Length: 570
Image (tube, rainbow, N blue to C red):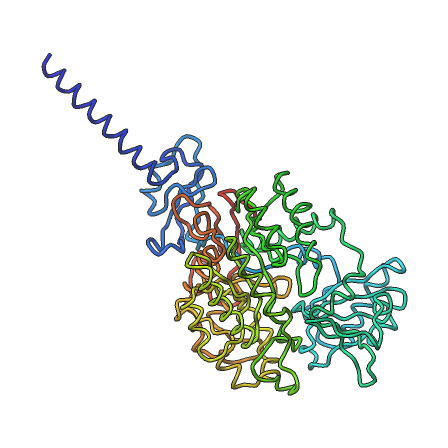
């Protein structure tokens, strides 16, 4: 009897200890420890988590990662109904985060005139002529993506297309979104005359006789765009679906959407998109990728009020990031702001598209309200202005985890890269812009300046800056795999060597820039960015088993994309 009692006590102690350990494990991981929905096994999983860089298996339950490690450890949480996905040795990476897109613009552009890659004047005109044939007389012809550098640098003019578009107003944006071409009918509708003054922060291009050529730069674009009929709610909803599906084919599971906003654009567009498109899609269960929204900085108080009411996280799909503004234009449009003049326009140093006093005041108010601030700066002077302003605002408003962002940070003066790390500024950069700018940068700022100060990814990393990768789609394609290869190799089309090889990044650093660093850059690193226990199970299966193949141009692609543990592509 005594022995039975003894064994009873021992068994009871074991049960109690087991329960305590179970509760302890559950508390630490904040997820159940049994009954995974899915086991992902037999692969090479890069986690973007420095504490466990690689694994061969992971377990998923309720859309989050339950365990990750070796197969025997992960297999322990297999239960009744658990499915298993055998990777057959393929490489898996966290779902890519694109840190800078114009999502609806990209979705709309997919069904408009696509001029990307057009490399002759004749081909340009032919594209327009073909699309006009099917348009109702009087309706606008819209499109974009042209790059005059591809046909030698000559800028297009209304005279190129007037003959083939006599009954259709036309607006065609340059690939960088900071310049557009209108035909003569569009200029007439917009009331553009020889006496019209350039708007603040913009330029109306004119010929030697003072007549408008049809090119509108930066805030001058609003003159034309304000006359274009607004895109319907249904068209914008379709654009979101179209863009989201496309992003998934590239392995992108989260985007930072900086909206339809450009210098001088109507700020209300962002709020209409927020309510009519994004919130609608979220509430109706139609979201396919996670979206973090940035709003025009002039509406900072409205953003603050919204965050106070709803919080930053509206759902697992939709987040409010912060506010965005512009300091300058773009290199391709000769409107990026530099300390020294353009080599091909010695009278021009670029455009400061927002008054600095106004920008500084809005930044200080936004930051004091707890909002994340993001500012577009491409030229070296624009970057210096924003770095100095951020330092001043932080000094006045006091210490906190603010993660100020500079979008693009393409061209930096000597010593400026170090300030990103010193001040804790996020460098939100787009590697594939390097491919588009390589040849034109020589003409615009000269070889010495572009070698010393352009696209300093490795220098920024070495300064302890947080470097986040994006595409700026539709300015460049959404393609993280290509973006990573560009950052590692830095070889533009037609070049036989790297553009400043000292700035080439390591593969793991480039992967992190499109995953965990991109998540940290928008305060989403607790939920996404790495394949870690408790985080969302967003991951990408690649077509290769070899890291060498991964870095070989054109041989690696996305085999499948999973969002929350559910296959979203194909």
